[in-house]
Length: 449
Image 1 (tube, one colour):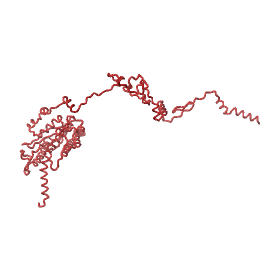
Image 2 (cartoon, one colour):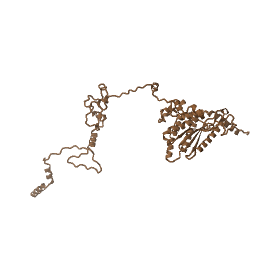
Image 3 (tube, helix red, strand yellow):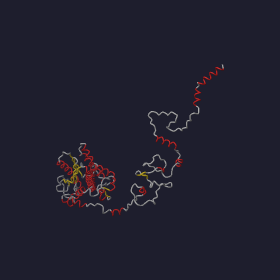
Image 4 (tube, rainbow, N blue to C red):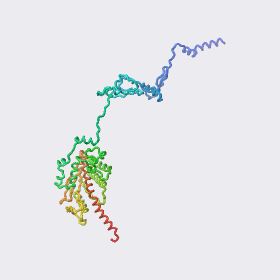
């Protein structure tokens, strides 16, 4: 039995898998080197990990950035110790190394050149400051290494304000207003000789010379920075003709802004085939309303000085003239009745008393605004003349884009002029009309009546 057992063991030992593995373990082949595992890199002898579908393979630059990020310490102390404070390495690339992490390697480039003079020389020490004492004082061409160490010194001479005004007085452009008025034949003597009175002559001159003299307060230049500086003045009481009497500058500038934007709104209506007459009348009426509120007029005792008449483009000129004349004659009757010394004597629109001694104060000149299509005509009505008639002051076309501001300023001058004139009658109107109102109320409350 033992013989058969040895024979069986020898047979199974000959075909056993352990015998084959023992032959493979013989030292006939060099052992595999130890390989350190790296992110994203396969180890020799091992199957590569299959990538998931839709995931792109990371580039070598990103793998190096990940390796640098993983190997860096997050401790501030360790980072400071790792800084290289020596001179920066010279590179042949025209752009800085974006992978550098130390301050010494972060160079500033101007025109593709490093901002370091004499970069080929080694800089001793741990600083990149340039020795200005050793730098040449002669100017250098832009782009040369020595050019970057030259400082540009502002050599502007600053002088006091009064001295600056004296120095620049000879270079300023001065406009002779009297010569300009004489050239346009709108001097006071010329206007009086042609039938204008003192009040209306001032209006004609203001409108004709609105680009030669200041009109607005200086602190309004912030809101109207597109206007010439010659239109603003620091002397508000004397030269600022368009201004707020109640010191409510916000409302005044807002009202004037709406008036200046009127020209563009009118042209928008034309593009949309909308008649602009209603828009013009509404905008001008709102500005007149602002002037009345700014002056503080009492609606019970206030008599207007401006009348508005509107007609479409097909309305004849004669019809518009008759309509505005009728409105101005009605206003003239109201002024005459309020200012007449003997109120019991009523006046008629056809025969107004021309003698100034018949009134407590001379009735003012009245103004009419006639609107048709994009045209705005300003006319004057002088009630103290023997035969009052309409006199044309000016005609403005709000459809002309080149005169947006000047047309609006002309209307603002007219409204402010009427406000100032009506303000000179404010006290006497309140005295006359206010007293008559009190008497009428007293008669109604008298129990004996």
